[in-house]
Image (cartoon, rainbow over all chains, first blue to last red; front, side, top):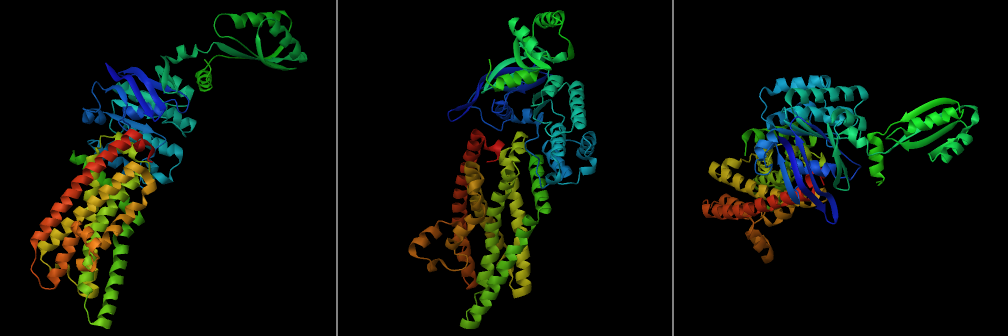
Length: 307
Length: 261
């Protein structure tokens, strides 16, 4: 069953097309990523899905229902967590969670709040006002609220911003466990590519309001056709090596006496052939690093408008 | 509309009030200052002219607090969500706008009741003035009708906030004071210039205060004026609801719920 189904969704602000005829679907239990540079249309898409923003046209179905006509059914089974908008800052963490606990009519509220606070290591801070918390602590509070009603569908918009590596790793573990145990569906946006790669089964890559490609991280990385090779060169023969590589038709992007960086196609055996030729020519290396394509490369390429 | 969500929002208003000295202070501080100023002013007027305006002024100032608090609280509690960019969480939850409004209106009424009771108590202690020298029915009707009009002005200001954002937030505090001179709180309708009297007759508040002064002069209660006040209030309240609903939908279209401005 498709938990999220979006067809030809559009939203414009005046002349600006924030979201331009996008279509995608997310299956039950899937961790789906929305990636793209700032202004790509990720948050606008999430805001339309969560009912914060009215769409101009297109079709949205959540949990098999129309979120406008079946508002009650859908909203009680979903939730949102974001690092950008804190909960009410004048209220303490516990007061905020009590308010949202009542909103979602959660049974055994206090017990559930205790569980969430323990899970996100916020017990000691529960009586602190949100305004006094660090950005990482606020992010954890947002996640507590996001999971408070045991949602079947959770929208996570940059929800790990500001977390230290230890807490970020724990958070990812909690989210993965939750997804596995409840077979919950996640729509996830982040600027941390390793996180997207670790969590998301499929990723939709967005730019300028359009979805450019939907695929797994593995397949998306194949869109970057070049890998980067960095060499440390002994005996100061950098210039000679550069001459040799250029003659071989290799694209050298940096060269000095003791170091050289070049790019080769990431598919096929080109890199091994080039390296063999370098060794056969008698060049001695002090260091070798081969950088395979990452989602970061794809992200940067899209952000800089490369095809 | 679900009661558990209204209760959740009432709880939020309660926490906002007890956690914020500003919200606690404005329930008691300004009403107290008003009582002192108008009470002592009326003593002075009596000294120099032998005219006793104490009851009329105190009755006016205590009843006016229901318009003032009801109107200002609705707008300020909506603004709290704008300031804290809290509309994002609020309206991505199952909360409906009608539930949000109902909770704020209910909470503002209890705050107005607390302010009014506090003022009545202080007026009784300082000036031996009792609001219940009028019949409880008259007091109850007056409080209800004045609150209803306060909610209405609060709805119009809320509509403007959802349409234009925080840049017009000054209206949250100032709107009732634009209406006050034409509501004949402290003076009779005849004191206003003719054009002012026309405006005053369109306000439901005028009929309440005119009736209050008439009763002080020994006239019987004129319930027809309450009926006129109620009809005008309901017309304005109905228009207010339509306008605020339209404004909220417009905010959803423009993305104001997400941005908070």
